[in-house]
Image 1 (cartoon, rainbow, N blue to C red):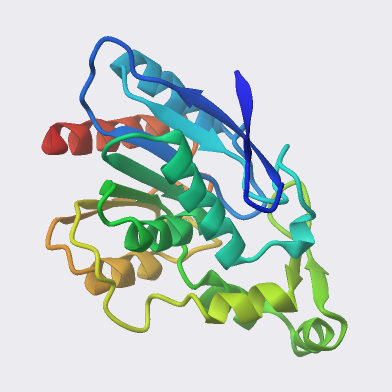
Image 2 (image 1 turned 180 degrees about the vertical axis):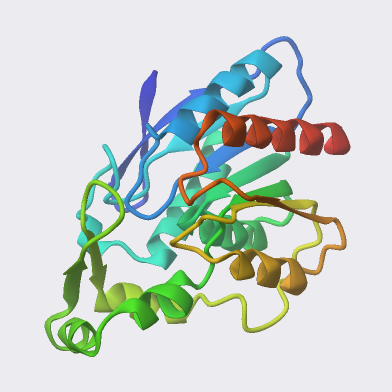
Length: 252
């Protein structure tokens, strides 16, 4: 059942939550979707079904400007979406949590974990894309598109999915204030990174860089040769479930 979390500024975030029944003490799961995606995506729904089977708590939600939540997508920034994530952790979960971040959600996952080290027990990234505004997207824009962003404040570019992407100057400026890969990432929790080698949006090298920069020595990188950025075929979803179960058992 979809519910609403009211942020301090009155903005409504919609979410779905499974609560623990029967005294299950396993860490809870929080899924963080990608840029322009929402809580109704295949990975989010699959993880909810899996959590129901394992008896774990689970939350999936829409950031500001995404899905059914309030706000104009064009007004969103990495900082805003990271704060949405932290609010969900603070207000909708109890005890240790495993954050599962897809693409941009992998960036928000790291930022939220840094802000709530006492609450985050483990991390699972799916084609995690920290610093994507600078490392990936800005360099893909043509000189004319870069000029348009700087002068007009936004640009619309084709995507590999249903809707075109909208990138704003505010997103790029704010992204620059949240970069993580240029130095050590002070997180010492188990981290699993799943990445498809056919990913045309986020290169595998980003996951390798995350693995190098995090403080944790417990890092697993699993490459799937046939998988693309969606990472949502039956085999990929089974690998995701296995990663969740492995981490849950490790933390039990």
